Length: 243
Image (cartoon, rainbow, N blue to C red):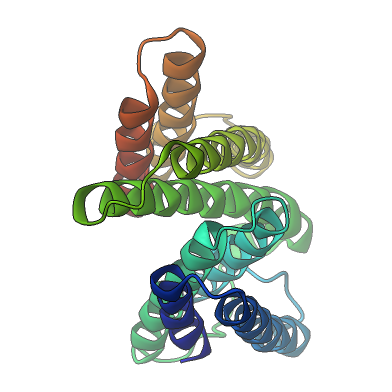
């Protein structure tokens, strides 16, 4: 509810162009993030595990990491885009987590092969941060498209700010998803005696790395301009969700 209210305040700030409304949106977004962080830390302490152990906790952590990245990005580009992306992802992922929690215990015992706090804290956290950053880049690109299609507010300065943010977030996402995938292979080698087995989860992780690399390649090689990069970033959300 806090994330959703902050998102509505961002929309109000864009409509009214009032600095006090924008400041209130940022403050409420930080308040939502503080509550989110408190819940995440409480869960970690109670379970005695790193923050990501199952699908439910993945949804909670992806929202948390996306919100953190968005709020940090907002300090460099005070236009409300990053806050809007952070709040939208925070709201959506916590809504997903709420429905996942209805399936039963969200703190079930770990399977024996996954019972490793070291790899849960390194591979899983690193790769999940990469996924969260990919989601944020896609949501920022979605803001670019929506503002360009439904409003006349997408001027050169706005488009330039969104382009720089999407590019920076994709670079961050590529690094973390790549390193996280390599760490996962090392963990698999230690647990199962093979670095890579082409199972669906490994393939999904690899697709995210490759897609982010494609976005960077298209930008560096001049194969796609701003609109093309935004379309690629939005489709990155599809690939990450599928993974």
